[in-house]
Length: 539
Image (tube, rainbow, N blue to C red; front, side, top):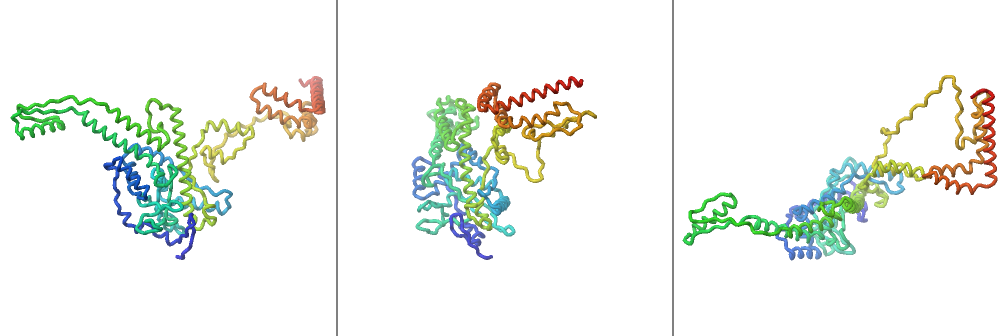
């Protein structure tokens, strides 16, 4: 296979034979590495030491701590699952702005190739692991499908496999035994990784992860849960007291102790005659302090992860529906921010990678199709159905594609059956032999109307309508449109009256004279028609 050189999204050259083998395939020391559990016996001093080591460049213990926190704390796991799974959405590829025909075709081809990626939803979910831990790296293994290079697998790699190189900018590197620029680690192979960086706050990446804000609440809650368990063990069980006579031997004392233990666990036991067992009431105490501390820790964790507390649980006091909606809007803002960052990473490290390797994107990353995880929620159909026609009437001209996007209704494809308005009922046929009047002229068509053909037996008012319309058209044309707009936009008769008062002063004397002349002419014609009708016995 001929070697071809391609520039990665960061400008580094890549040769296609590098795709045949994943970068970590021979790093057995990482694959066989067993993870430690820093939370076992965790103390404030040990926690502070782990955080200090991370700032000094040793990230392993910090990321192992983060893994333990998500595994052992059910509340953190639940809240992180809500935030991460909110990003697993339907997706589409969007062509660049002002796309050419070739770019539109490339977008369509890349969309079909993306469908070949196995378990793409899992890829997006693994990408969101960066939300809590600062970054997430997924390794791409490529293979040939017909004549195209496509991802065969995309595998999440633990954060403990990487370290940070501080130079002009921070750079993630694979933790190996090779020294590069004075730092242990190899640069990540172009087109071999999806590297998503998510900063919960500004600053160096080792301090910018969201879990750094949760470590102390995790520790305090862990202490409180342990203290509560010890409290229940001591104060919740009655005290069993055994009494033995002064002459009892060591064997008798051991027998009595075994009886106490047996009665405590089995509710049954025997003791020698002359010995006594007393059951004292359990000592009194109040566990509310431990519960208060646990609740405070969990509420703080919810605020850090989801931006509020009322989407996680209700306390029966401040958990109103209105406040719950406010907290839910904050959660949506966080989701939208997470989705925007994920779209950028997937566009750079996956969509562009597939397109560039297969020669579909000669314009580079700048002209690459954009990944779009669709976080747009469809609008309420009832609200749109009532509001949109009114907006169109007053001159708002939304596109059909925009309306479909807002409502979440896909555009119909060629040949697809679509819903439509019911057909109008047929117009009833006139009785046989009845004269058929011509269509009445309306609007601008009235100015060009002509008289009916000679010999048609129609009433005089109908015969005179076209001529009357032609005569009135010059005078009506200048003001009929403003009056129509006024009537359509008015909400009451008073509004029409006031609007007419504002329109009429603008008319000139000549326009008034022409209008009055046409009105008198119409009245005269109508009167003559009435006289003729009476004379002919029409009525």
